[in-house]
Length: 329
Image (cartoon, rainbow, N blue to C red; front, side):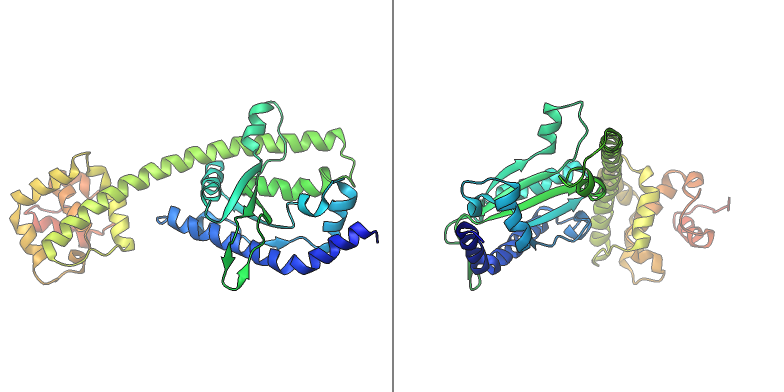
């Protein structure tokens, strides 16, 4: 082994453990910052494949430093001695993680080594391997417990969508490695699959947007109903599957000024407040969304029972409270 390679190997053997700790720290930090960014949905739903840092094995590191590349300073130039990959659902989620990585200036200096969106703008007719790559380098004096990180030590972060990850797993080790000569047919098939992935990502984003709008409306209605329930009963409003089911069905009876409408309706029907303030006799009266059910029944008695999540036996007492007769469908 040449002297330069031996010096490289000796240094790597001394620092390998610190690089492993650096990968763990980077992963842990990104995940904890995502918790602050995504309190509603949770990181568990956002990250689709567990993020696990990986230290490059020694043979691969030596080959990259001295065979595959011709670096003037091999040790400092290899930036993926440790790396971690974050896999999310949509390209917009890639941008969310990117903002977290770029915002952690107290821990590292981040540079974007590859950006598929920029590449797509530069070559709009090309459909190729996609991923966002960052290299983060430790700021001076950074520590984690008893571990002191080496100033400027790098960690590569890859951020992909689930579909991009599937494409990479399928093609990258076969089409884009120098040990394989890719045929035109292979490249064409890969390009077609990437074009389909881009279109699918666009469709997924549309679906997610529609779902978020619907969920946002339901959450808004639930907040109003819960607040009114707590004011009437003095009891905390507890979210349950039945409460969610009733909100989802009966939110169609709400308008933009629902909070005002519900308040005025309750003022006109003070006996509703008395009913909910009394000790619970019917378990349904402990479900905040029943206020919405009563509001819907009062507004349109015939329509409110159509396809209701509640049975006829459960609906009939609610109609009776409002002085309305109940005729099964």
